[in-house]
Image 1 (tube, rainbow, N blue to C red):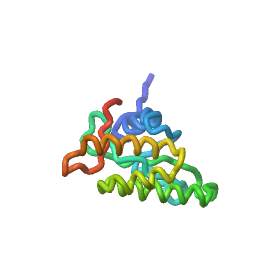
Image 2 (cartoon, one colour):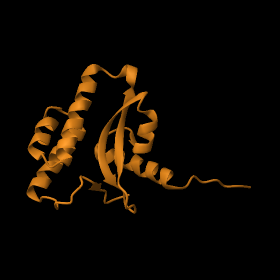
Image 3 (cartoon, helix red, strand yellow):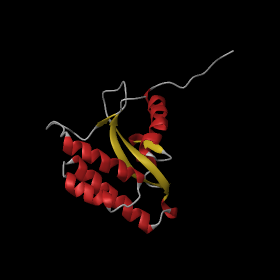
Length: 138
């Protein structure tokens, strides 16, 4: 009798991302490797650049939105604005980032970043900050 178990970094990351969905208030998160494989058929938006507990190397994570032929032009426009906001956030252009995130209205993920921006203004990160968000829980 054999008992098989999936192991390794890929499975570990997938397991962590399942739990992280709650933190980001999104239904489905995928890692960068998966995003690269499906980006021609699935629309996604970059969510964050995170370091999971127990790992040194950060990973970009994405929200899977839907199949390309099913996503509206309005949604695509919002995804583009979100990416601009994220780029501004990472380059420490926090006022610009906040303005762009606010354009997204009731987007839960944008609200998370607006809250993060508040903390960054109150307690600025060191100069070498790369925009990586360190997760504190598994």
